Amino acid sequence: MRFEKIQQASLAHYRRPLLQTPFFEASKPWIQNDTFIAWAGYSTPDVYSYTEHEYFSIRNTCSVFDLTPMIKYRIAGPDAERYLNRVVTCDLRKLKVNRVIYTLWCNDEGHVIDDGTVFRFGPQEFRVCSAERQLDWFLDCAIGFDVEISEVTADIAALAVQGPTSFAVLTAAGFQGLETLTAMGISHHPWQGFDVVISRTGFTGDLGYEVWIAPEGAATLWNRVMEAGHIRGIAPIGYQALEMARIEAGFILPHVDFISCNHTIRLGRESSPWELNLDWTVALEKGHFNGRRALIAEKARGIRRKLVGLELDGNKPAHGSLVYADKENTKQVGEITAALWSPTLKRNIAIAKIDAPYYDSTASLWVDLYLNRELQWERRNVRSWIVERPFYFPARRRATPPPLR
Image (cartoon, rainbow, N blue to C red):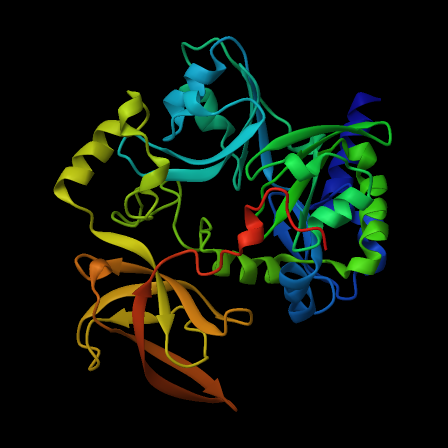
């Protein structure tokens, strides 16, 4: 009997190798395009209707994004804080209960393995969310610590509710008390028979929340939020619209803006926190953590390159373009990792890796841009200059209480 069950499970996986999230059935009526991508073993919509419509719901009304595939770990036990503080670059001793912090974790050479968020639910209880599975690394680092580490990705459904009317939508959906929730804060809500956690976090750079619930309550949550948001312009969004918003927010992605040192093949392709321009995530003063010695040495000798924001002339995104120090394109000094003509900012923006010492330059840099026009390639030399990130940071993102629209 047990062998037959294993066979049936294997056959089901063969027929559908990617899992469906607990929100899938409830979201099906909203899917107008059968355009899906794979994310951490799940199938998730790339586009629900139209990318432009979804993008403007993030910036002008309210959007919902199925966040369930994000990898989640529960880390608890007597040594949980001491253990995590040994692994990540920030100082978790300063993180209060019911708060969230963005951080990195590195190998012994100070190269970034991954980035993510750490949720603190108690003195010795945390949740770590990351883009990729890191269980082997976390377990290897746990030797000698009294700590329990378990992956809980499938045990928690998550829905990102983002945009100017997100606060009004969640309030109308029955979640009270959000007016006092500050950015990177966590609140707990008994709702429809479920224990719901809401964090004021997100990947859009706008006012927004992430709602965490047991999978059994996912359909109820989806339907209630969509009903509450009907008069407030709510729309489900896929990955393409989220990608546009995260570039405007200046957020970075693994395998897009940097490569995890666990996946690099060629030497020199890995990145440090200094090179990713994430100095503020590193607390050298807290004592020993993975990669600390290497990071101190690198900071003393100087870095090879830095991830910076660029603004370009024109309105054509510079996807995958090279950056040069001179108009004649004789000296390459970097490459663009992500680019966008921002519909909200009306600016041509990009995230780029720029070599030393040009990442501190106030002079113009030049981007070698190729455009396909009616099956003919055109080459353009476009002026660019380094600007601060984030490109987009509305006041409502951190306003407490947020505007009720």
